[in-house]
Length: 99
Image (cartoon, rainbow, N blue to C red; front, side, top):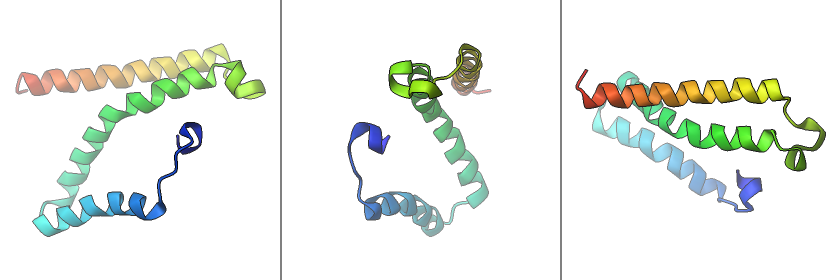
């Protein structure tokens, strides 16, 4: 995304943003395994925001040139994106009902 948006983030800021949460977990004495699982669940909610534009960009010949996705690849990627979204919605549904 950095090259596509033409914005640059300094390496020290990227490192700080990635190291601070782990230091916080360590300093609070939280269970690392449970924290890792929770972080992956939270990250799964951001996945559609990366996957959907990726599918849209890779199917466009004006952006990808000769490396454009074939229709079957776009279809399969769309199915995978819909599965991810469906599972996230199911998780929200389960959490809302306390299940």
